[in-house]
Image 1 (cartoon, rainbow, N blue to C red):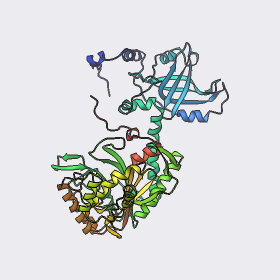
Image 2 (cartoon, one colour):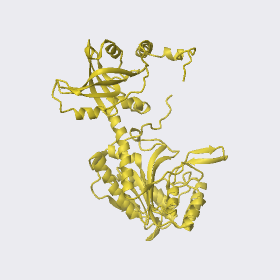
Image 3 (cartoon, rainbow, N blue to C red):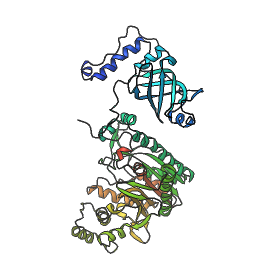
Image 4 (cartoon, rainbow, N blue to C red):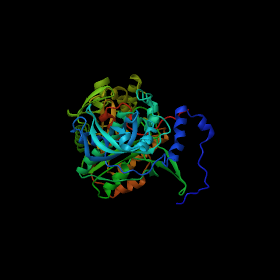
Length: 508
């Protein structure tokens, strides 16, 4: 494309220029100096042959002051430490894998090239061609034979001793945090490894990964408050999905047998250290399985991730030491309530009795509550905060489990568990409800709840009910919170530390 010679250079807004500090202004002044030398201040393609971590490992065998004359490499990265001296200087270059020292001499690269290097500032991105060596202090180093300027950084990096000390700034400016904070780079690189590990685990068990719709016309698959958007072409409101459950179970009807999906969910709820309005889950469904298969698979998954990805099964999370090597505890919700406050809901037969107990034990209730909601409220008040070691909480009430098969031993309950670790729910599993008549009735009960004020109740998904009428095989299903799983494995106490760009309140 031919350049328009009459085109005027883009000028920065004058008000913006006045806001620049001395360092920022000085860096902008260098732009014209680069152009005068025929150097593009914002760079061109550069061929890279090596990474910092690999070079440090591969050439650690060199002796002090030895130069490997036949080991020419090219590397690119950001200047994060700079010691300019007379005719020989040292600086540290950082790429995705880590840092490596560069030794540059005027008599090796030439006066012009050395002068170009001397224009560099901390934070600039450069390319280095050179030979591998080890300094007399034993540090693997690249002796530069050519310095290539790639990108001028117009803002200086934070002070190396303090970095981004404010956690809020770290999350808002994650791109800077990743430059200056080695721990943030570790988390950023470990999360994809954990995700791949989870996918590999399910792939090896014969599950097939699918992608289902994010925009959904019906609210279903979980109890949660949705984000609502409008599709102009159809003049119809749609929801950003709150779960993938119903779509994946339709695939079981279609004969796919073992399916999973890892993807983003969206819930229009609060933000705290373990909640973000968009988050990642993995849902998996196994035809001809049940809740027991989900228990067995979950223990196996967590131990696999702990041993193969992070290399340990004892973790410190949310102030508690967690042991993933021991068998996970199993207890019903009713047993745990009785254990912690003495109330035995197996003996509580009616809603009226449950409400009286709620009043006696100062358990808050809402207008739409049925018997099972009251039981769940007792659990939330008296049990959740005491579940430290991995615990499968079994037998949830039908009233709060519209998609789970009823427990044959007591029809007030379902074949369902939630796994709690360090007081947090990690996953939710069912023996899946595949009776289309029962399912439609449960959906209609949810509609009544919504009328009575439960904004999180789901709707009647007639298409899903019709799918069940074709026959869905008996199945076990489970949904994992991926962000919380990463938090636990990497021992981070805030979800904002394991999300690259978390949702934050607008800065005033």
